[in-house]
Length: 243
Image (cartoon, rainbow, N blue to C red):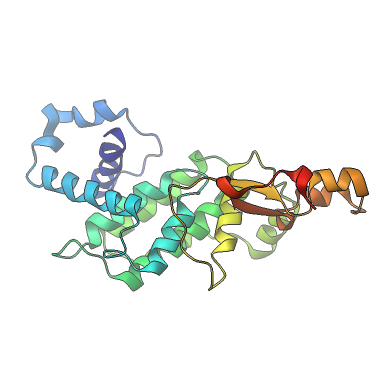
């Protein structure tokens, strides 16, 4: 329930053009002016349709979303932070039609943009705080029915490429799982996976094999992103069984 009211809070903040990166405690926000937000016409219906929207995402509702949109939402489910959920809630509440549906093509383009910006930000400016200001700006652009593109916060291509090449994608970093999930869905034949299944990060060329055979000249290659893959928890094999 807190998550629902949090997502709706960001919609209300955007409507009021609030760009301040710090946010009030949830209860304090809704207590403003004798609970003015909760007493407004439309609040209850907004909350109901927003809850239903996220239920459809959780259930991977193929009657509501296209397969392409569901794949993009699956990738975002492994985003390094939850800020995407807030801006997606704002997008839905602004762009839903009379039947509560979204234009699929436009929605997919939106998901592509927030995925790219969120994932690159996690490497260039780690931490959710650095993401707040640009996302708050774009939330207001959505309210104003402007296209989003994070135009004020573009990354330098050469610097970004260098950061990716020198970044340590350890298994403990959430962005590692994010990037592996994104990469899997760049292949057209990648099927939609169950959002409720758990996936483990596994080495393709295993640590155990390196210990026994010392097949890699550069041992650091073991931890490179290209030597990792996501395997469903139920079918994952132990590294010691690499043969």
